Length: 429
Image 1: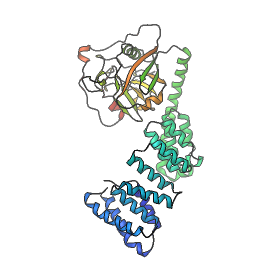
Image 2: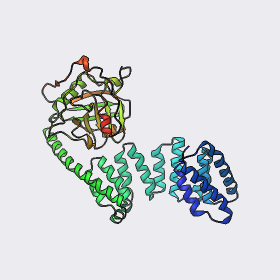
Image 3: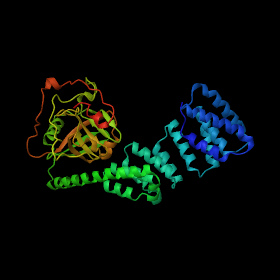
Image 4: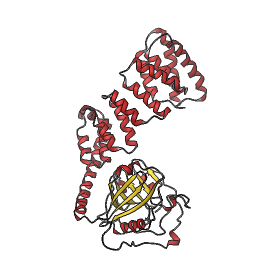
């Protein structure tokens, strides 16, 4: 059992609001047991009886008083004891005593979501409606959204705060990061530039983080402007190959970069038209990074481990020249084994910009519709089919490397710990 986040609120209330000589003994016991449990980083089995005894003594005192801080202390110990119904009753009592205290309301909401599995969207919508000026509630909701890959919704939530609240340096850093995740690099830079400079200067760590992020976003902005120029030319030509990944969660529309990765595109189109991808799954999904699929071993009943299979051959890399395409939110790219020319059928779709993959993986397309679907994908979501919706008028036969019988069942490799890009490159073709 570990100390819950509610301990912070309870401790603050106890130390700031309780007074009087008749409470000194209870306060001293509360402080001693908190210190002990904090030092050992959580409750041990032998602590339970001591916590229960103290909680019962506080409960007896509270029966004749309405002292906010000791109700909070009783709540803290009740949570540690795992008594859910009693904890909810104490939370309710605290909210009645302090209806305007958004921190108590937030703590109770998070407790109920954890214990009762309440829908986070419903809970936070209600909280924000009740406490529209609470940046703490909004930023907790933003954190939930970001961890679900819902970057655009998180941006919209932050933008409902006041200008002063958004300019708080900590909030600004989150806001800019979300804008970056949505390929809005100029907006991310502007957000950092508009942070409360006095508050920034007062905290060297924050100042350093803002400077570092601004440099990162400015570099990404330059690459993004190059990418947009290329896309403008492609859109003007109007003949780029396109495809549609059909999933149960919706379609994902793709534009394929034939001018920059012709053999990789030919390989993808050939496999798609042959039905190679039908019934395969997204076997690897890392939130705030990418979703990977295209392995025949991921099908139900297939032999071999998902992530180690391929089409029985490899294709050459096309990310080694000066004109390779970079990885932004919604990039379609080839997986490989961290060795040259080891791609085959596996591909991945990025949730956000992943510049550490530039020049390491062949980016051969982009999501032109359905990025929200990509960001909602989960492990084992099925690729029902990949349909090629447009091709240029020529043959699409890829150049391949290796005999089928030798490459059909490569020996699975263990992921390498560390950089997610390194892990990705050890998942097979």
